[in-house]
Length: 632
Image (tube, rainbow, N blue to C red):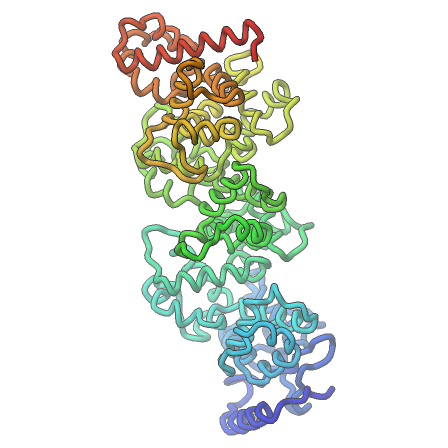
């Protein structure tokens, strides 16, 4: 096979390089091995003289290891041998330090050798013409190939894609081969004692451990990572987002779990990551894989682009609804929570978000509800409450529901900061729009939904309303009752979290209560203030003016009917009447009895409590009148 024709400048550079290598070439096996031919579609991109052919399997440093652990059909192919030695499973198969050192130098040569950059220039000529960033990179330092890897999703040339695919597997096997990573993270590696930074001292597996160590430090609040290294870590995670083989630590930690849970899942486009995420809390999932998956999910929470499927599915919607505007700090706009709030706001305003993007959003909202440790604000502000009341309940959203129970005042209480962090998380995940996001609720209420709410489409927001209508009936089960009241307590404190109420009343709320957008929250408004404003206008006469629209009024009536069963779901009433509840109604604990008790003692109540109970009584009377007379 003939070598591709090089330009005069490239030929001169190649001749100078060859002369230098001939003068400095160490004995074979003791330094940098000569680079073998690279195949694309069976044709060598370049071919050194036959007498200089070098094979890993024949080098003294690796010969015994290759013969011992690699199939015979791989011995003549350096890339096949390299893949074999990098992906060893058993501890007994570990290779010698001399062989590790040789492999590292071999890979370093591949990424920096001018011949490979010349080959990239040939097979990726059209791509380099389109991606100016790569064409302008300084040659001889591995930057050109690293740049092409970064842009590989946009490569359309078949031969170029093949070439870059092989180079990607090599580069991601060692953090020191990734362009710019070493320069950005050298200080952090030393400070955090994440491992050796000297080539060859650590074996291939521990090189992945260095990146893993830095990732864990990045997602741990107590440890500080420099901004440059943080960017480099997230960039590496983003570049490996489509193929889980490229996240070396996760790949090695989850190989058995992938075969157990995701054997039939085709690799690429982040599909294996998604499959493993869905099985993270299965009993058969190994601890080391679960830990690696959690670290990657935390990286996604910091930068949504670490999820290939989410970034791809929502790319157009993010641009369409200006969710990644240039005037925001990158650290803020990249956060998963910001993306979810921005796109959820568009959905609630009736804007069209693609079904593929909404499906991805649903998956990641469920992910945040399942595992509280993915939310730094919960970790930071609720640590004491979790340690005292909710330890050992980590899986399937149980910790968050334990915190919700404390928020209701059942078996303890929440600090103000924890309460706010929990309220914010519930807005980000928006389980009121689709009960399936809350796995603990979904599992607890499945039997009730199948019997009492089977006429409602799965995932419809009216499922929660249906469950509330069957609260304290013979169809309700105790565990569902608890999970439902825990969630509804927080939904009742922010009117936007009831999607049906928001859709029917957003015009009235803006006109009468001066509300802001769905993803904007005013800290000046107390919990339940907007709903209180709406129901104050619900029973005004036409002469008094400024009444609610018919649809909004019907929603207010629906919610008041449901909340009458539990005063804790009416924030204003609970806050203003807590003394009177203790004074007059401490023995009234059955459903609806507390409100009836307050109504019976209306003249004895404190002024603030009497006012809100009076308003509720008046509106409740109107609801009954409308229902009894079948008036719309």
